[in-house]
Length: 218
Image (cartoon, rainbow, N blue to C red):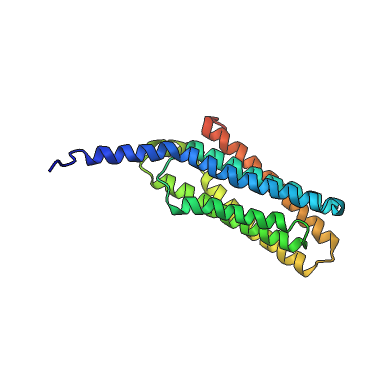
């Protein structure tokens, strides 16, 4: 019987193939999901066009930025980190899509429902960050170590920040539920939400500059 004399070489070949195809797989999957979310957002806006208020406009803007952020973060992660994906790497994008669906669905519902849906989305986002950074750290690929070294403290900052957004939006949901008729509280929480999301996108700019070689310190 002929035996395989090079099992390690075959393993390396298979892993390299998976590593090479991982980015295109991620981009295809997340593109389909985000296109569906954007399509549903347009559908919800169109069906409620004559009921749009200033509050709804703010919620629509933040929801749109949520979709952009999801795509952009997957774009950066898929182009830089390499590891062998598992079932969780297929599950998380769909969980993000489901949570985004509920964020869009609650734009024209009570404000507290939108905040709770956004908190769930941020929790799934935190899981995605934790999964990506953990797998990148324990991966055998040296390029991951180089990128992580470039990023410095940004991975930890990103994980802590995303989890703080979970707590923050859940808190906003609680207080807007308790004080549903208080417009001041609504506008204050919305203002903080816009600032929070804008700052998080600013972190993404710094994150990408670090990856491509910008030497500015954090």
